[in-house]
Length: 311
Image 1 (cartoon, rainbow, N blue to C red):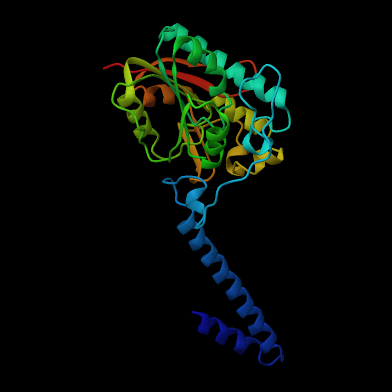
Image 2: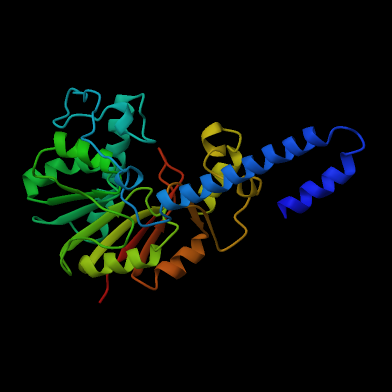
């Protein structure tokens, strides 16, 4: 094909005396196209679509990470992570970071109280714990009610910061996107996650099945999800740089979610949306849907779905 193209252009331009210039231009374009294809192949090889452990899977050499100093705040027993360790959560406002985590913790606590009850010796998993933004605020229950507090995340950089800075009673670990949790059957009372299934394009159903396996009978799962309200929010804010960088124009140009669901992206950056009636129908195949709550008044535009493990 390349030889044919060159021959055509040679015949067209040989009478003008510009054939060498034209052929050189073609060579440059072909080289750029080849370079682009090779870059895509490299990307696909080094950035798995869903089975990864971040950032170790992206690097051939991994050394002990270095962190900026942690922040000690009055009234906080646990250090506050430096800005780099707060992805998407108030990196420039320490007080807001604390208040946001406490607000989400209080919402989760009230849901547990309503649908499960508060007991001693409960086992709680923060699924997608980041650097402990919410989990830190359950420390009083660990000390007063002997709660077992677990946290897992695929972001090894953040988990490593928690290993160094959280009290050793917190059981934290780095996982991957493959649906497996290191817990026995029927061993957890509650699993909660903030903005995890909003980015779970792959294997969401197997994750729900895995949650069902490790939850006790009657145990509850609390997750935030993106539905019509979130879609409307992004459409109304489509000119913001951080929105444009994470969402396709084909979505942002639509004022309404006009399909049952919409998945976008790959294992590195992805966004998922469901219509409210659809997510209740789909997720209800794995556990009983107790509530699909509207977004809370502060800090969020995501719905909260509450599931119960019935056997």
